[in-house]
Length: 124
Image (cartoon, rainbow, N blue to C red; front, side, top):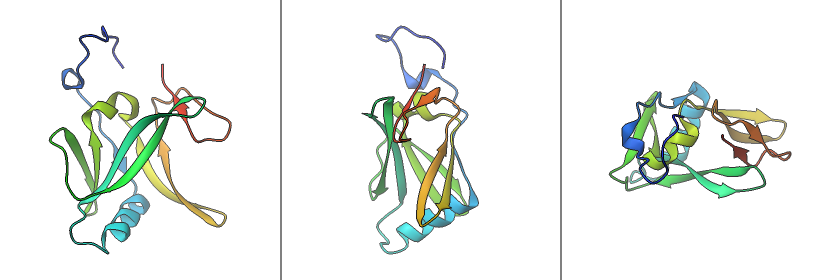
């Protein structure tokens, strides 16, 4: 991320690389939204969380905000608030099976460190 005076920072001032969805992530998003025709996709956000600083949030989206960016793959849509882009730009969103668990994985090049439990990440 380019350095900027926090008082004058605006996400609109940057050229974003965007997010990518793997085939597996797109399939899971399609599965999640299939049950409700009013749902447009998933929203990926960032919140202050955990010992490393930030955590990911995911919610079903029926209404998008005017500053949401949309990333699509194989008919599945992922919406990201513009304000989250400085923290997750360039992220690949995947859906994987780990033992009995199935989870979304975020391959985030901006994450400089993660907490020991893997629930939060930090950027510099």
